[in-house]
Length: 477
Ligand code: NAP
Ligand code: MG
Image 1 (spheres, rainbow, N blue to C red):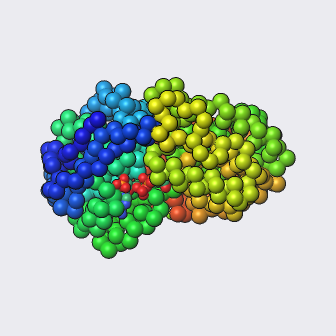
Image 2 (image 1 turned 60 degrees about the vertical axis):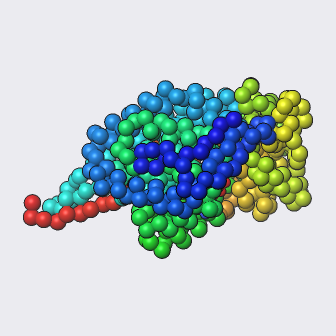
Image 3 (image 1 turned 90 degrees about the horizontal axis):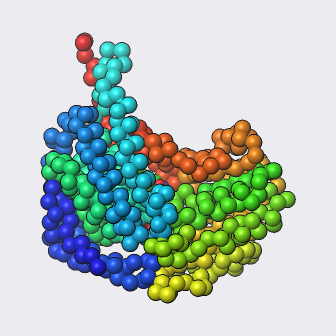
């Protein structure tokens, strides 16, 4: 049991003005794993004030100074990587195997990619006789979702520090264990007081105070579309720049003549990892009609190999993050059944044979629907769970049209025997990112969505540039 009773303001761990507590639940067991304090609007004001004050000096930090802080952050992260992984599992129930692959190293890779990017960015250039200067935008409010608890914080914080901004971080309440670990690391690297601040608390209670605050210059938000729209409205009142990383309904296009069993395994991974709680989840699988039946059977085989259970043990898939999320996913699975998609594997309820002590965890049966169409709710709305929706298509042009027929435009996947053909299809997708014949991504490559998936880009040079203002100085020099 951990108690998080302090927030981090102006270089100190302090009690909120009026502390109020809420329990944290371990999603793997349903048991209480700790409690966390909830700050209020007054604490938000104090954090913004500290960040604004600190900006006066920190905005003059040289590139070398900023890189030194980022290196110190990376070193600290490297040292505490095991604790980070533990915290991620306490927060969201991510299995060990996935922590090794992503939640642990991914956070470090994000910091390192900000360092490399800052080394490359030229902060002063000339356009003819005009001097062009890239300056930090000011106080950055960073609001994170819980599904990548370590990476999302390192991506945002490292970009803001690289840009020379000062920070008020509002992590997701469901990611508290990890967020506090990150703040503890940042506390050790001797940043000037007020450069990094963290308020804990409920987004619906303190979010508006942060995103409406006149002294916040930039808002970086990752989360749901509804909250993103609210934040954009708030930001409009004071003409703030903002970055929104919202939802997705990404299509995984299987091209004709693909290796069915191999590609089916990839399609399953791309939607089920992290219990499907990925903005980029490949939640629509588009398959040539002629191989549909064989393909869904291969997906079923792949799903049957996945072990669901204790994330601290040898499970491939842990629970989903909360009871509320579990219920939402149940609703979508039922809606797929009601709308007439074929239930190939999985379904409603919890998996049978959960290990002893884990029966109260929020586990989902990994589910595949076949013979779905693109108008069904399970094809249009983000489920955020391990649920695949397979849609048959006639021609590759149809597949592209179905893929693009979505309010979202975050990512896409194209798999096929001919890489050039797959690349040609990738270019026709209206999404910010496309995976072609593999599932890796470079942490320094831009990440962000078209359409309702968001505004702006994160990662590498692109993420830092979002937090820079551009000044032109015209003179006779
Ligand atoms: P969410 O409910 O929108 O919450 C995200 C963050 O916003 C949390 O820190 C939350 O705080 C806070 N928040 C809630 N209400 C707020 C308000 N009125 N003002 C300001 N902040 C507020 O989203 P979620 O359920 O945590 O995350 C899942 C969503 O994130 C999915 O839609 C997913 O696709 C998206 N996502 C996108 C990306 C991407 O890169 N595009 C990556 C990952 C996830 P509390 O925790 O206290 O509620
Ligand atoms: Mg957009």
